[in-house]
Image 1 (tube, helix red, strand yellow):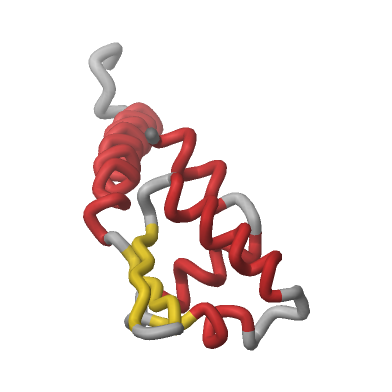
Image 2: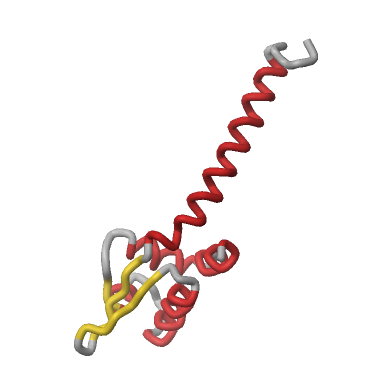
Amino acid sequence: MLTTTFAALADPTRLAIVTRLSRGEATMGELATPHAISPPAITKHVHVLVDAGLVTRRKVGRTIVCAIRPEALSEVEVWLGDLTTYWNRTVDRLADLLEGNGDGE
């Protein structure tokens, strides 16, 4: 799932769509407005995000409204937290060694 999420977000247009949806729901037209691409192209981008589980869409009359699924990003949040913990510990160990507080002293 993590690779699917990152693959979906790797495209700048899809990343911009998710960023826009983080501020609230939007119609397909609203999502397409800032991009110089056709409506079918924006539909394909949204479809990739829906398939990745990052976005939902629903029909309201003749309009399609999209929303972000924040819980879908929880796996990324956990991964980043683990990575941050690892690097913080690594930097702390390096600082200890540089200050002469390492186990070898």
